[in-house]
Image (cartoon, rainbow, N blue to C red):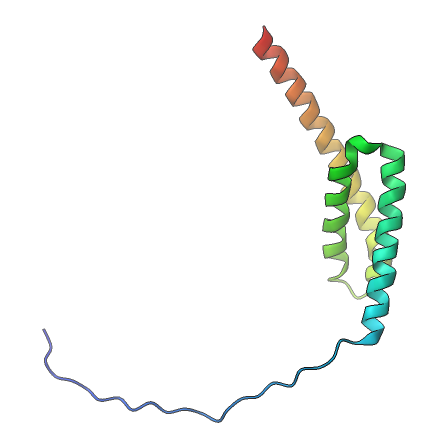
Length: 109
């Protein structure tokens, strides 16, 4: 066990301040347009697919929106991303339904 003590003096640097900037009005306008586009595409796709696919399609729209906002042109990127994500979501849901049906058949036998 060490008995020797070392005294340390704390040194603090200059105080750092951050400036808070207001939300850019240009971005706010795009966010509103983006939300309208997202709602319109989602509603259109849900009408085509039916209520059965409502949750997977909504999840696909949210995922596509998250990815689209990382680009410099989210309004252009979102429709394509949404179509890709929606197609995958429907395929996955169909696959899950087939597996569930097959599992029930196997359990019943």
